[in-house]
Image (cartoon, rainbow, N blue to C red; front, side, top):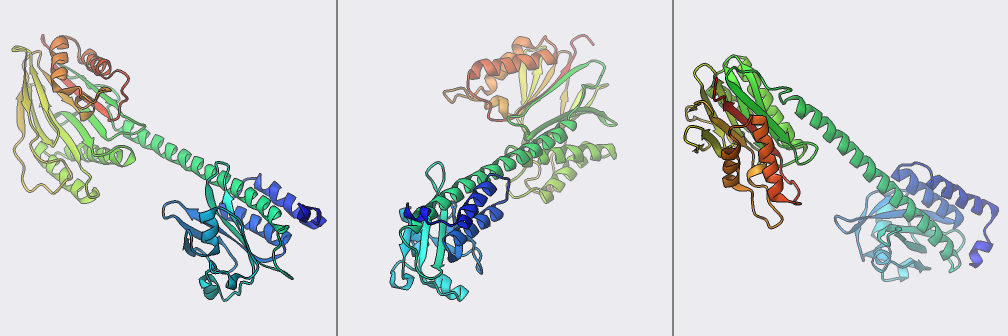
Length: 419
């Protein structure tokens, strides 16, 4: 403690200045420069530097120095690396006589290091965040009395560094949350705001993303070619899949608005997605057009299935498979012709994404197709809105406390029994 008693009024003021500065908002570079400058002045060192730990590589990165930037050292190499490894201060009066000293930094900078005081930066959780080093005390060497003061400044630096990083993490989290909310607004704006009125038909769509945004989409809207029915599911979760399905959705609507038939629209959108989506990205999608006057729906499906057609008169299901690989996986050289589905009174088209079929309970068992079909059979006489609620209730009752980890989207299209 002898060194504290010898502090000049200017030294004390420098310490108080840096302590006050560390309580104010600052960026990382400014903070590190303020601490090292205060340590250099108070301890009368020619130079000061700060090395920050890169957790991803386990290396120390030189962040603050007079003439070098972003030099990297493995932990254990040199005095800095030894200090980080042992998490103990190192006071060396003759660096070139110490076998731990690494002269490479001197060779790069042209500076001659005589003596050094090297201190670990330990944050409030007891974790190493970096190393502070002071070089060449003016008029002599660093004494044992210098160490407590240097440790106090290093502790200030570590705490402030932790605060800067915590603030940056919070700001990044807030930025990401804001971006997700914007993506959610964009995605929801592409969904139908209300169900179209089609004489003789009842329909309902549900979209429940697992997070703020999801990789699913659906559409039920009238076009010149008939009622457009879409269910899409992009690979992954978050912003990128949301953008993929939104892109697919918008292109489909545009192609049909320009007069393309179902097969042409499907192929053109697929090929555009193949050109724009990154490797490994694709969208499974059902795309259908219903002619309400003939009660015939024709569809193409890029990897989306099973497609369930409940036949009310028989109380059974007809299952259709996908007609091609997922959209965007590769260009479509040729496709199968659209598959027809004829609706009799009471018939229901049931389109569901994996979020329902693969919803798992606490034991890992999936909800599965059989439970979907049983729910439809039990409640097929209800409206599609009620049927959707019953499907969701069945899933939740089955899952219990198990969380939703995948997006849930469904489209139900029913020909009314007495149209």
